[in-house]
Structures are given as structure tokens and as C-alpha cells.
Length: 292
Image (cartoon, rainbow, N blue to C red; front, side):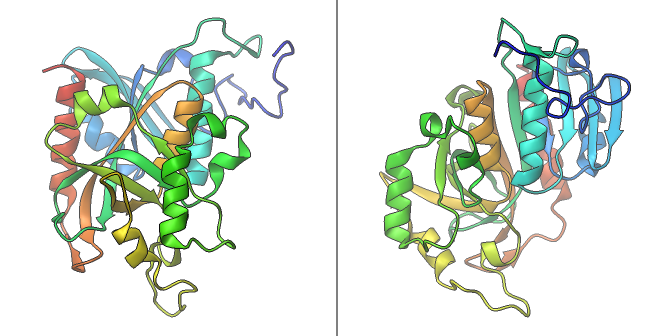
């Protein structure tokens, strides 16, 4: 790119901060913990011995501080892949675009983007309260296909096997599959369930829930549960990981999702008081990031 990025595309506020995140480049750590729920940001920051950045814009809350000497940013994304499209693009802009010249930087800065969240388990052996680490994310949302690099990160063999085994409806967005960071997985996910995560573009119908509206494809969940590709099975449903993995990998960042299973969609169990489990996962992640 030889021309500055136009103001309508790289949007900055009146203080020169990136628009939605309301952050300046020096306020962002290399290690970023992403959570959907804004209330979890201060829960994470409560473990910091020092907080140097506090920012909020809409549902996006940011705290950058230090845990055992390790600089870490905690940031809320809100729910859904559409929110992740905003957050990941703007995090990358903070890391890799000069905000004054509006030009990409010559040297690439790699971020470690770790999503900590909750999910619904799709296998009967995964008990509520257990942690599930995402090795592959299957996107049911179609977001990745808006970017020209999707072929470079899309695991075509697994995607095509998923479409074939599912008999996937052609009037739904075409699925895509992206592998997460092996380096982050080895550092942060020891002892957790591992597998494939299905990222849905909604909480109710796209995840097979029905209240007053009937489902167009009531067998989808059963087919997803039975999917198998070279021993990999779909362990859980959630709403953000495919966008995180797809956009992050295309932009050269390391990405990993770890979720607490607060529901099991096969056994119909639900963990009402799941907050202590999330807090424990947060502390484990911080300690592993800091190398303690």
C-alpha cells in the first residue's frame, strides 16, 4: 500500500485514538486477553499488581497492567463475530499502522490474542465446569469470505468434510475452518479438553435452540455432534472464535480460545453459578502467560 489509509476507513477519534477501542498504540500490550462480557475485564484486572491504562467506549472496556511483572491487556469484545471483526481489525491497526502517517509499519508486530469465555458442550463426556481449548474453529457465520486471504488460512479438507458429513444446507453461509496457534496452545491449554469449536452467528436458532420459533434445520446439532475428521470432533458451540482465528491468522497474530463449558447441549445440564470457574480459568491463564 503506497497511499495513506483514508480517514473513513482508518477511523480515529478527536484525540487520535482508534475509534471503537478508544486506544492509542502505546496502551496495548503484546499479550491480550479478550472476553465477551465487559464485567470480566475488571475481574481480570483485579489480579494485576499495577494498572496503567483504563479505557471504555460502548461495551468495549480495556485495562492494561502487570501480572507478576508481565504486561497484559484485558479487553471486552461484546458478543458475536461482527464485534470481533471490529476488535481484531482495530487491535491490528494499533500494532501495525502508523496513526500519524496512516501507513502500514515496515516491521510487523505480532500479538497474542487469547479469548476466555463460556460455551455449550456438544459431547456428553464434557462435563459442565470443564475447560475446552479450541484447536480448530468452524465458522458458521461467513465472515472470513469477505477477505481475500481466506484461502490462505481456510482448512479446506476439514471444511469440505464438514459440509459433506452435515449435508450442509446451501442457503446458509458457507462454513470455514481455521486452526489456532499451536504455540499458545502448548503454553496455555495443558490439561483441558481439546477439539473443534463451532462458532454460530447467533445464540438461539443457529445453536439449535427454539422458544417460539421453529428451526429450519432441526437436525443440525445432531449432525454437528457426530462430525469426525481424522479423529477431531466438535466439542462446543460459542459465538466468537472463528472470527478471532480467521482474522488473527490472516493478519499474522497468534490466537487461542479457552472456554468454560457452562452448559451441555446433549445432557441438557446448565451450570448456574459458573463465575468461580471462569475466575479460576483467568488466573490459570495469567499465571501461564507470566511463566509462573
